[in-house]
Length: 153
Image (tube, rainbow, N blue to C red; front, side, top):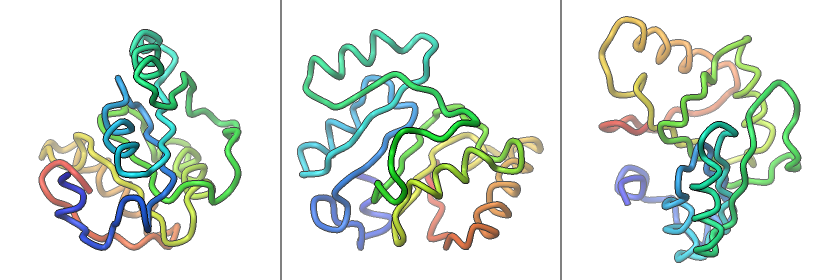
């Protein structure tokens, strides 16, 4: 797993026990983590992903269809050790970062937000502006930026 190569102190099944995978597709990341003693809730958007969620559930991976919106999600504060978003197409910085504030609420102190998206790795002007917005917002949230490698930050 590339995240482990980037940040060796992440120990799945020890330091990381509960994860949220946003925009999960067929929940392969959740299945990977489940084999490493990490309970992962995989969440897919409400558009065309119902079949993918059904596939995940049939494989025994906890998954649901939901949407990040301006309302609080049902999960308690500091519930997750790791929140993962890979190509989830969520604009985390919109409306002054209201969606990232919700991630901040659900992420435990010392937890990790792993983001794999075009603003991380593509060098187009609009995407670079989105990357800078993300860095500015996470700095204001007092998050510590650890590493950016390839398509993952």
